[in-house]
Image (cartoon, helix red, strand yellow):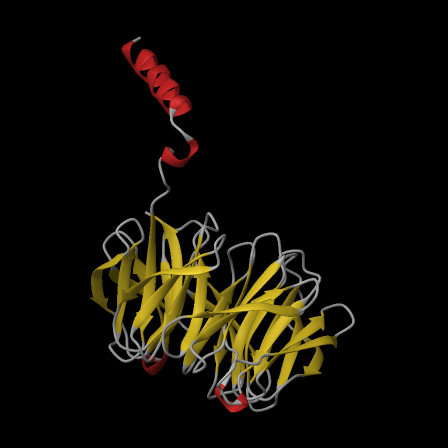
Length: 327
């Protein structure tokens, strides 16, 4: 009876709180530090790095399993994907990734994992729970970005030297189309509604918008920052807001993130962040966007609603990837 009364009192207290005083959700960000062979852990309540742990050599891509029980890291120079326990922050296993894994993506169902093997021009398919390689799929030269369509039926892989986005059928694991994009494509990202896939081209200085059904480029988005030469603007990471209304594009050595209206395909503004901005991740509630800044060795925290950088958090050397999860 006392427990019931206490629960009811708690609900009454929460109801009486003003909206701004509602308890905030607590998140941790995990950042791979390519040069330090480490992973930084950021407490987003405190807005600071609270722990740095050793991982494999040259860590780059990072993600978390769908159930939140494991962190996966591409340990590129160890030729493996490491499994990290988010509670103990220790390496508890490995996945057979193939040589030089750089980036990866989980299927929308949570399994399998698709890994780019840059040196061998392959995409490795891994059963994560079984820790078993299922297949290796030939792709273009120097495969980089991986994206899975929201319906789970299509896998997209970019190849840096071929300058293409390759489309694979999930069921057959066969390539069904290749689309020419700008020079040195890095990241592919589907809109949440699956209507478009955006591909960043680092050397081309552009983003190609592709119709994933017709396999054609429908738009090309270019960027211009006052005072910077065109060759200094190198798009890499791409992220969409949950409603797909806005895209954020990391512009590498331009030290800026472009904010793009996805209806007009126009840049609304540029956000000045750290040096050589690379990858990005939203907090699960969509309130903040975090970016890794490789040459300033920090993470920028962006208030998404205000479109304003609110914090710079020091991490290890050459931060590359970032993933955010509840505590």
